Image (cartoon, rainbow, N blue to C red):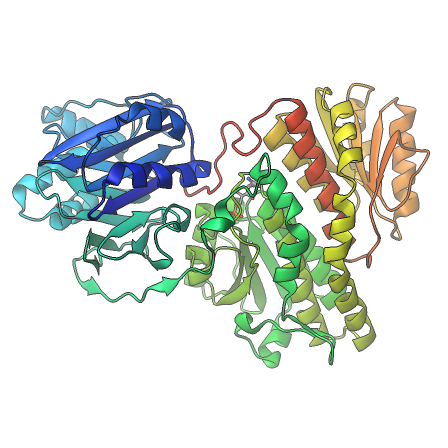
Length: 605
Ligand code: AGP
């Protein structure tokens, strides 16, 4: 959730740290801080607010060629100057930035306070600086001090630590929260996300859980938690700094929605085979025999990733005729799931770092499950932990609300469903129909994007409502869920999604002119049933915005999108709902890219 950046090299660290923090702000944005080492003493600045507030508080001459920075998403202690990181030890020798949660922080704090340590903040993270501060006096090595301190810690962390007495090195460590090293020319970087490094280097090394690294201007060494050195191969990130710019759009969210014709084309590129009407998915690492052997598919992910998994489950059942369902990874990991050898597990994550999803994957692996990943971020933890998978190639998603990654995930599932179907009973004719449909998607998304003016006006019309109901049936239901999710997270308008068929079992009581309904109504075999539901809403004086393939007098307003194959229609029906949520949020003056209380990458439980 929080962003970490660290620099050691010949330049002044502060501008590099501030630049990196700006790039990481989507991970957390309630307070920020940095520390640099100069003449064997620490200089720090910490502020409640955004990275821009921190930049304003850092004097122009803030010299020091080694430093660490942090942008925070509060878990323990309200956002404030003192609760902002870095945290220092009592001698002001050690500075620590931390992402994650120290579960035994209260116990450690009591113990340290009993020994006379005075805490400055309410955070769990501050125990780390005091523990390391004590250990560093007992040993001659910062690495050793960090290793020893971490032995008494229970919880998750990505940390970066500097010691004013050792101004040539930074120690970073990972357990559950990402840390990536960036290799420069006589300079080294570390961060919680490549976004912070990409302006300076594309050569990176990911730390594994339990690993620690010592970085110096001329290189790095990595170690296990029992101080054994590990060997790491750097790899080259194929995104560049331009991918992280807003491209002249007012918000990253609008940029990312608008990119979808290209990002979907990238997800599809090289993966459709017209000879046999199959999907080429080399990264699955499974031969045809193994692919045929699965009797169930279980999909796990969190939030929007989970909703895209529901679209995926529907696609797999329809095209491959394998029972499939999706479940929130955050629930799955805690209910001691039965892991079956003939079930294919699929974990979905844009960031590849969502802690609940990663923990679910680790639980599955421990029980011998076969797990694939559908992931956007190459080299991320979930990509590394899974047995194989599909990269989305959607490019970095910066806005907190997921749009292009959601769409590309649904497209990746269509490819997986085609692949599983064609080694079973999906006919060549149906295979061709799906391949052709997939190929039409980018142009059809372009067409939907031309509806933006109409959708902007509709968003303005409905944005004043105190809440909205979203309904859909079967293929339309996950679309309705994602539509409600987008609206609530960026506009803060209360939004509920229900299967259309469930309305009469309870939620119909809510329907009134004050609670408009967004109805997802594709032209499929359930059209008549959906129109009947609209009639029921109308009879209760509910206003209706229908999203589908035709206009209808049963609705007050209609958004009409192009038709594809019925199985693929959910992918297209989601796009207008993204634009609707975006323009509702703009009309309400919300901070579209950084909605309150949320963070892009949820690396805590
Ligand atoms: C999406 O709009 C949300 N911000 C959120 O639900 C997100 O999809 C979820 O946290 C999972 O993230 P991931 O795809 O990076 O794992």
